[in-house]
Amino acid sequence: MNEIARIIQAHGKSFLVELPAGRRYKATTRSKKTDFAVGDQVEVGLLNEEQAVIERALPRTSLLYRSDEWREKLIAANVTQIVVVLAAVPSFYEELLNRCLVAAEDDDIRVLILLNKADLPETANARKALEPYRQLGYPMLELSATENVEALWPYLENHLSVFVGQSGMGKSTLVNGLLPEARVRTREISEALDSGKHTTTHATLYRLPNGGELIDSPGLQEFGLRHLREDRLISLFPELRGYAGKCRFQDCKHQREPDCALIAAEARGDILPQRLQLLRKLQSECKKPTH
Ligand SMILES: Nc1nc2c(ncn2[C@@H]2O[C@H](COP(=O)(O)OP(=O)(O)OP(=O)(O)O)[C@@H](O)[C@H]2O)c(=O)[nH]1
Ligand SMILES: [Zn+2]
Image (cartoon, rainbow, N blue to C red; front, top):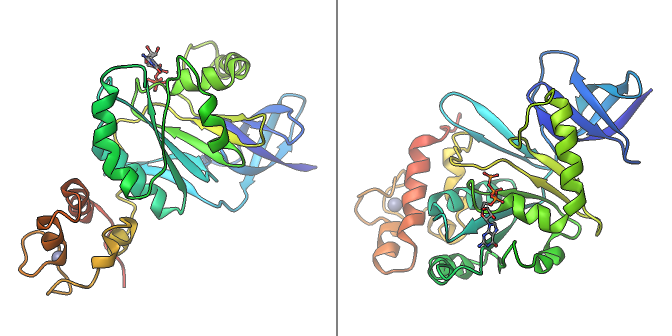
């Protein structure tokens, strides 16, 4: 008899799935099909006490992935909130933050910008750099994972959240602070699946005591968004979308065309140069609409 399970770890072609009551199985796929992600609800057939086969994924409410010229990589499925983890040290890439914001808008996912390492004096500058994003309406929280993570709990309630951020921003430290026991347990499982290799390079889903769930994803240096449709891009920038269709030329690329509404808005200081810059960059990276 088939059961519905949740993928809680993905290791290439092998997966760890969990039934609602908590029982875990190593799972493989029937065919070569491996495009399943942590967070997926899947129908599985149980082979024995330890092993299962994934038959298919149930429809997803969201799918977060990155793509570049060569490949696509699934990050997480069914996520309802992206927690972008940033810190002043090592310094964060503002473009990566912006790419997360765009990806979240595309999938209708909520965002929380989490400025970690609040104990460091450098945090004052990072806070200043992030102020424009707060003004755009993105919720922001500042804390120190090594000191106290309590302030994060209310944001995680009733969400399937994913931690996204560059290496070194403190994602693992946050998970340790939130769930000291779960983390150790998962590392053991992870090592078993990987036949003893010590690794923390896999996304893992944790159930939270308050009803939410949390996915800790490996550090991200790049967030390719080639899969976004070029004609939808401007709508993924909440403060830019109002300018759509207001340029002199209908097919304006907002580069140096005369009477471009976006260039004018930037000159007035109404929009952030780095946001317009990313829009332009994505326009040249992304999928052309097919009519
Ligand atoms: N001062 C300070 N250091 C922190 C804080 N949180 C994490 N760190 C340190 O930052 C470093 C990186 O933390 P990790 O939790 O390993 O970072 P990560 O984001 O999980 O990195 P990857 O596993 O590479 O993706 C470690 O040395 C932590 O001790 C904090 O709140 N304050
Ligand atoms: Zn324009």
